[in-house]
Image 1 (cartoon, rainbow, N blue to C red):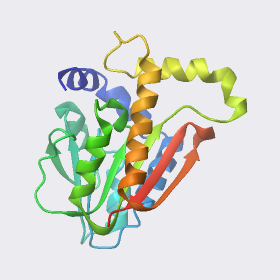
Image 2: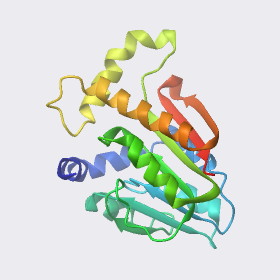
Image 3: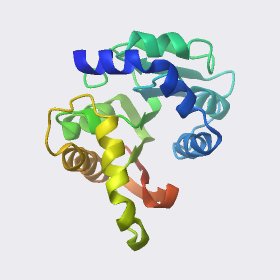
Image 4: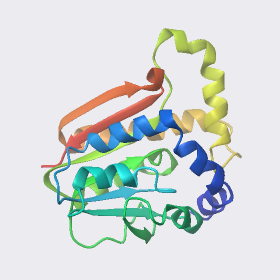
Amino acid sequence: MGDVRAFYGRWATIYDLLATLPGVRSWRRAAAAELSLSRGATVVEMGCGTGANLPHLRSAVGSEGRVLGLDVTRKMLNRARGRGDADLLWGDATRPPLSGSTEGLLGCFVVGMFADPRSVVDEWCTLVEPGHRVALLHFSRSQRAWARPIDACYRAFVWASSTDKRQTDVADSHERRVEDAYRRLADRTVDYRERRLAGGYLRLASGRVE
């Protein structure tokens, strides 16, 4: 995780600007809504970054609810302070330092970084109370025919946002990890639903834990 901390710590300010662009905000609102949260619920975001999702989660659970944001990069958490009236935790999303259960869990733009995303999704599902949802939002290669000519741009974007540029197949490895995470969420939950946003380049999915 040292490479992740260094990379995102260095780019925290620019990341924050991109994370709060109007178009990106609409995706984040959709991700928060996918959890079907009730007022007064407790919700956690894994890899909360600079906190762009936290206000949307707060709106969903109301002032009586609890919002938790966890991230491995302290500079990201510093920028998240004050957003969504959230409790912020420094820690590794693969081994979240949480006690008790939650009524919703969100992971945005994070599962592609894990070496074993299937086990991470398994761990996340154990933290959520039965009857409540886990949601994922992540970039993925578009399956639409018109997107093929710009696939090279997508691959360049994935390479630029990677913390390990020594790999020769960064985009393909990223795609496999994302696919593994979504398949595991589908296997691990019921009432799984998935849709594409942003011209097919974003996958938004959620499932209900039994």
